[in-house]
Length: 57
Image 1: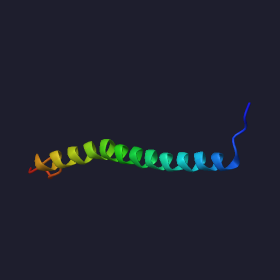
Image 2: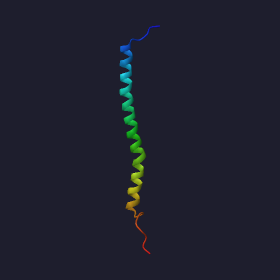
Image 3: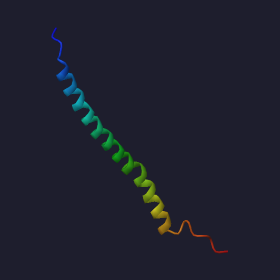
């Protein structure tokens, strides 16, 4: 069984950190689009239909 050198371990760790950062950013972007996007769309739709206007008595 061959042990990997410290240089190889550091290089692998550095690559993993970069990939992990890209994954986190992608996840945040997707959550923002699919999480807040529909909510903002619904609010705009309700405003356009007059949902938030006070009723005339």
